[in-house]
Length: 364
Image 1 (tube, one colour):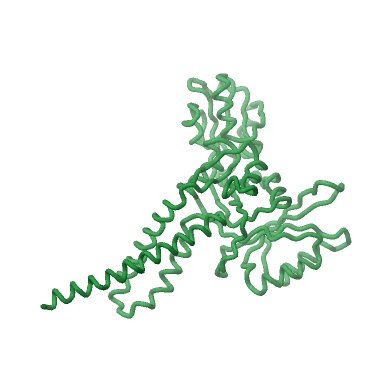
Image 2: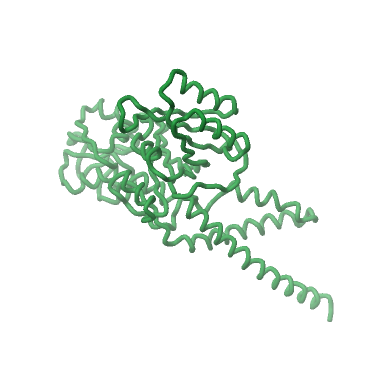
């Protein structure tokens, strides 16, 4: 047997070992997907992929082979994602609205293989996930121009779901009307209150009458079904083609920077060990005792543990008059000893404390 034949036999033996390890790796990828589905996480985790490469580079001693090993790992992870995408078929995601709504766009971009199911309002989408009817619910929590979505925040306080991911979607609002309509025909504009707020200057300058609707895409559908050229909707570009409308005026939002954050809700709290990176955040909702300085004590505890509070919102609690709860987003890793000590100390001064979730943001 010459050296060529020996090398080919050796490669055959190695390929057999690789095949066995490949099958084992793909089974483990399936287990990871089950966890992601249960925690409302997308298939793609770019940061984790880079960590895998960095952690495995040291396994190759030959510097000339290292760069090819990186290519091998990237191809392997690409194949794993394709396999996970096939397994994800059947994952059901609840959102508020109809096809073309910004929540639908965000859900489709983050979970392209999933079954995306519309619900008429925030609460019904949230409860669909709570009951197990849906695996995940994707709901808006804040717009960079119009502010927070109070109804969704209230659900985080009263409900049982957790937030394990935030989706950031750049929103471009457009004035949509029936084919053949011109700007001078429009008398009434209908849309979701957030969209109307985002386009307040445009609407005021033109003196349009405004009417609220539960969803931007539903507003477009209403205009299409009404057949009235004096009506227009504010909605996404995608919605125009879905409902046979034309874009009379594009990009009418008052601020050029117009981003909406969507929370991905699931029944399980992501307990995976997350690295301490600057991009990690967590959310707390709590009520304070009815005594002087109660809120100040809580803020001091947070500050003493070195966590930066990126936002704090106050919302009324259903029941006794003037009672409120607080929705706080903090930067840092709550899974550390310091983070766990923070929760223990806050538990001694809060009437009610809930860790809503630890999350990373995904820019769509």
